[in-house]
Amino acid sequence: MWLSSLKYFTKFIVGNDNEMPFIPLNSTIPGVALGVWKIEEPEIFFLERVKLYENEWLRLSEISHPQKRLEWLSSRLCMKELLKITNNVRVESLNNTNGKPYLTNNPHYISYTHSNFYSAAIASRSFEVGIDIEYLKHKRNLRTRFLFMNDRELAFFDATPEFELFLLIWSAKETIYKLYGQGVAFKNNILIDLDNFVFGKQGILPVVVDKGDHRREFEIHFIIHDEFLLTYGHDLLPKEEPVRQ
Image (cartoon, rainbow, N blue to C red; front, side, top):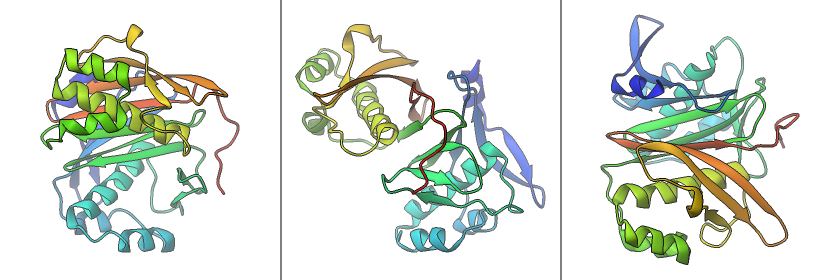
């Protein structure tokens, strides 16, 4: 079971016998790969292993907070480990006009996420993907639920006011936003299908994107670990080629 891989950090040997806390996860979606990184290293560790190019250096230069820089860098190294990308091939991580990340010289659809001391990456050759990770020890103001939950979701949460449920609803909508793209409102367009949802430590959260003129159904897979909550999903419609522009 893929849950067992979360009980320890699998070590991968790279370069000069340096060990890295990369956690490969067994995705419950066929054709989709994902992994988690526990951030324990200084910035120089990542800079020595992630070969950045001009646009990536520019993006990193825009991040001033030391922890945020670690999160960004670790998510990129997590993707390299996930797809076994070496520095011998020029593979850049860029964003298209819709804000979605993509890799040059690589056929995978990808998505990144990071939160405090964890980052994660997801990839697929056939489907658009989205992922979100939330650090459970980072407390949030539960009153913000009114900003992203609709009336039905608020009633459901108020009946079971658990912090993990609060984060799960938020994280699932964040994953949908990354997967679907811009132009969807968390509260009014991304709707949790509460009639077909059972709250637990892992499972599938049915989600509907309803924009009035069209309606799309998604399945968001989730896992609640001792230290983080992870949601991920894919577009049920296969794509021919990632949008690069």
